[in-house]
Image (cartoon, rainbow, N blue to C red; front, side, top):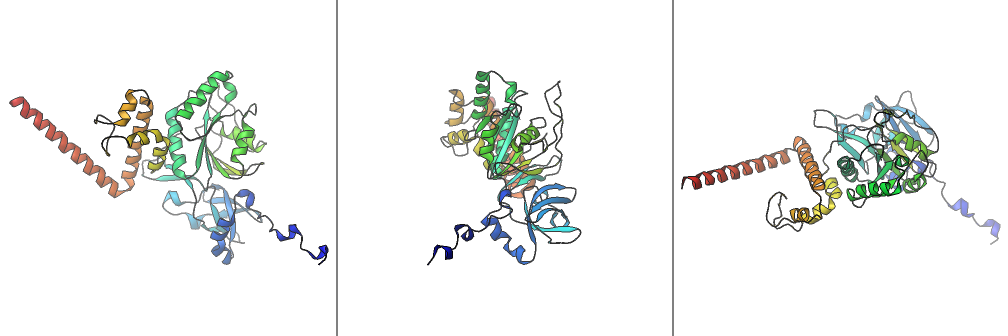
Length: 373
């Protein structure tokens, strides 16, 4: 057979899917098959705002109504990063459904109601931006990390505005402090101003979906501009008084990165409440969880029990008091959140309270009897 009759290598390879740069893969393709059979179009949500959303589809950008995917549960509402099934045509076009999420970053909503708020979906990397323009708040870093681990994504901490710490020894100490509070999590110092560390971060984030999280003024939008290589996000001036940037990002936006992958920028988060993040808290404080396995009692509260390995580590300096207190605080908060939403846990907590109350009353009675003897 002549070489001219052989099929070319390029002809044998399937053309890349137009949505592949946005994270589309064989798994999503299989999940979407039932919707494709109904004539619906696949799209990734790049922005949601007031009952409408923008999506990127194989045929280009689409603006659609979200009325059909607005359940009462705020954790299940459409969010940036979702893969959705949208009408092929029409005016207006509607999102009819979205595919099951692989990961979801959820926090406790900033309200008195016991509700969660989903910030981003189908994320591979949870990037926690911490500004070096202010004093490090390690407790806040641990809180973000707990939510990051709980989401199913891989967290990493980026110390922004590294150019404001010109002394390399001081900068190394700051990085070490964060690493000690983030076991198993990469920590990088980056300056969008000078470009230092941006190329390394781009390589880490390439090929996946990342969500950028942090307090207002952490330099997230400036970092997004540096990663994208253009002024895609508006950035306002830093206030000289406290080194904080003005709150510019008001919606969550999904943006493609030139080196591959996409990033979701988010508004500055003033409150970062936990939302059913027991596993995430355990991951952040992995060394305490490991120590706890060596306690004499399996239900040790690590307060005054004999044979407590955690207290022993505190005594010999292996574990810091700040770290243990942060662990306790996040555990208590998480239990309160679960108790508000889970009747079984509420009942269990009430049972524990009653048992402790009975123990206290019995101890008091025994003490009184001892005094009367």
